[in-house]
Image (cartoon, rainbow, N blue to C red; front, top):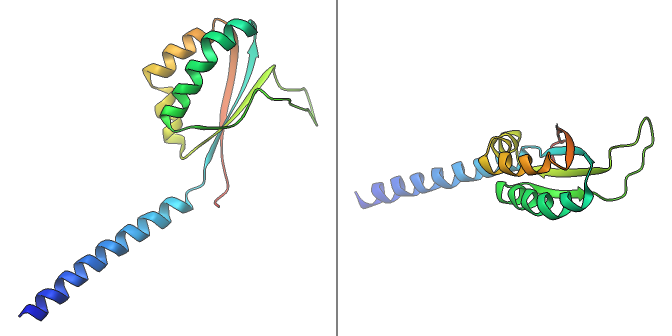
Length: 128
């Protein structure tokens, strides 16, 4: 009888480990999502002082990571981008939507819109 219990427990534990492994592999296969924003800054000093620290903290708290923010840009075809460009990477578009629907985003964006005009979009990355 003890052998049957041992085998049953071993099977349950094995199934649990298997389920965890499958979930982990599924999460790894999910491609990242890139959030790109073009920002036409009208008051650089106030934008940098009042908006950037707040916005960056909110993005990081919501799970976004910056790949580029406001650095030198170069246009290869067409018009050059606006005065500031950011590129962020997120785990999913749902996380971006949750961040953009948050009170923290709305509060920060109210400040940002006093000093800039925003254009933003997301692009799904390739599986890694």
